Image (cartoon, rainbow, N blue to C red; front, side):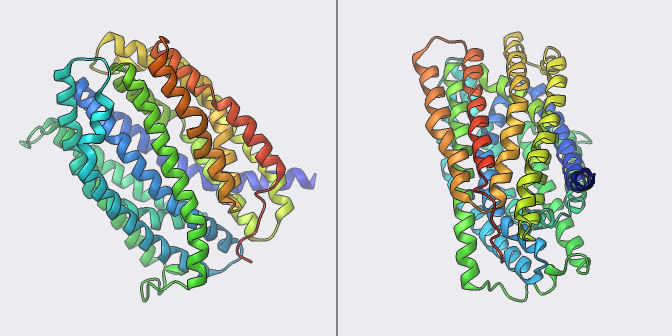
Length: 458
């Protein structure tokens, strides 16, 4: 009976952390859906240009995520150990590290964006459409680069608060930013109230403004609530972090950053393989991924919350309890995936009709949505497993499980099928994404082994 009560207690804590993230991500992805529809109403070339530029931005987001998450392992365990000074050191390190990364990525994308975007335009299609798509993608990216520094600093703040279990504040900041972005899109994409109709560039400007708004809210709120977040007191009196901690942080942050970078580059390469088969696949995968992001908010937030909970448990020294709770939390995450997969199947035939594009692209998008729905429960399982493995700080296993798996299995298969077979693009995507079942088996053995169960702050 006591075990049942304990499981319920942990489930309540898990939901307390996860639900604000679900709300935040759900509304964010819903607005992204509206953004996508607004741009999609302008035309297929705008939709494709923005989609490709966002593929490159996706790599940056995950580089920042990996850097923040690597240090966040310590933040969560310091929280479990009630070590405010340790939390303060992790926060300072995130600010410095993320700023450097944002500056480097901005420079790289500013120089290489035209070349990188053009890699997605090598497939069959109208050369005039490809040239227009390239122009739109480059213009969109040039504006989005302005928002990279605030994204890096925002992740340092929001990541720290989430690692402490305080997910409501980042949720509120994100919701305000989402509202600003939505209004800005309406004003600037179509040119309302006498403003110029700027299309995709208008969407980029609105997004950048919203990034600064989100950062401003996090800085002001955290600074004014020092009693609730004591780590912020004196956080900027000095940017010094003890050398021994810097070394520890780098040892965890760099492999995770390396992992997220390789994984995101792997996914970008896979999408480039789809585009090689057909330029129509670019617009179709954009439609599918927009719905996937919206339907996946539950299991994605649950996975991250599982990692935070595991970090708190491991930081408090309750190592055996961590292994027992991991299985139940993972099952609940998969249940979330199943529920939303069923919803995706139901709306797959109708969702692409919202876009101003060709009937063939709509048909492809419906097929892609059905494939994603079938794989969603498996993705939920591997996603929760990833955060469980990561919570103990064993970054080598994390890299093997995620990016090595992607580059050894997924990327070569996608490349081979796109270049050397006559499979349709729908079958190509179905086969490549079906490898998630193999990843589930790997996840099962990694988590069951208990090799991830470590306290790294005591």
